[in-house]
Length: 353
Ligand SMILES: NC(=O)c1ccc[n+]([C@@H]2O[C@H](COP(=O)([O-])OP(=O)(O)OC[C@H]3O[C@@H](n4cnc5c(N)ncnc54)[C@H](O)[C@@H]3O)[C@@H](O)[C@H]2O)c1
Image (cartoon, rainbow, N blue to C red; front, side, top):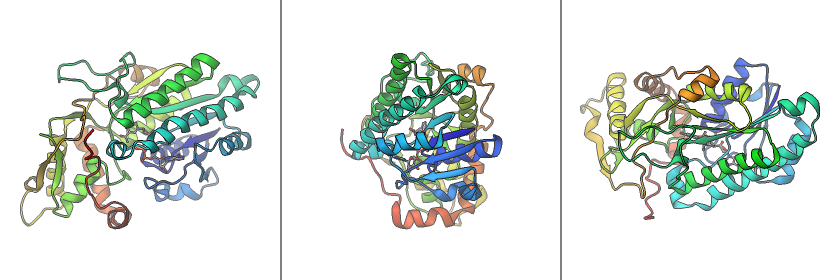
């Protein structure tokens, strides 16, 4: 089976490529223009596999997308390419609209034109899987609110989540209007190996390792539902194979933690794995001015996706964190040049909304 996958050099995309190539008889055509967030090393030996082909193309390039479909004739598409960091979307929303909204529309049109030219079982079995976030649902206002599910109303509140919501709407519009066989999955905050060190868990881990301040937004009470990227990748591959046109899959691990609990757990794990002579690392926690419009709580009810896909997240948060932190400790050769040259751990997204 030939799969066109966009964003396969990014954090989640690369986990999907590794899992897909290891678990299925698939060939992956990986369309990724290699932004600052891309890490070809994350594919390891798969990078040079005859079952993996990288196309360094922009999904906004309509001619290139049309050519890729005509040339590779995929049976499935999984669309992950996006600008993905909320704080960057606050500093500069334009790129988020360009890639996440315009890029999705361009890809949908290229895929639809290709699909319309198919016949028989190739046409009937073609699927387009759009990967999205729980942030499109807005914010739960208390710990007692029911978690998000497939029926939750959209209420995006940051430039990032608004651009992802727009892309979800486009995918559903193409399905409804043209009968295009697409579906959407939404999931919660991912963490795990190879995550770019601007995101909370690697940022705090590496700052703690270097004895630098650990920035916590506001009072640290904001809640996220943390899924290990391997659990997410397994759910995505199942959805890619079994997904039903028009469906929504709300993927989640039932692992809610406050931001402060996450930072404290990182400190405890590092203290255990690499003790600091000065003392416990919780001393480094520094409360910083809250992110503008910071959503209070995201949480997902995954029962629908679990039943539909025959899947359940396996990692509890503390076990996944232990595995992740060990990976960062063992892979300084990857993150050190990024910290030194591309992103030094500075705060992003401080612009007042
Ligand atoms: N990280 C999370 O916690 C999370 C949670 C839910 C959903 N998602 C969604 O999952 C997807 C992947 O997220 P991620 O964290 O792996 O992102 P990432 O930022 O790590 O990777 C994105 C990849 O897309 C590529 N890309 C960006 N713009 C492109 C363009 N115009 N053309 C071609 N390639 C382009 C980049 O080079 C990069 O390799 C995104 O759609 C994101 O919205 C992420």
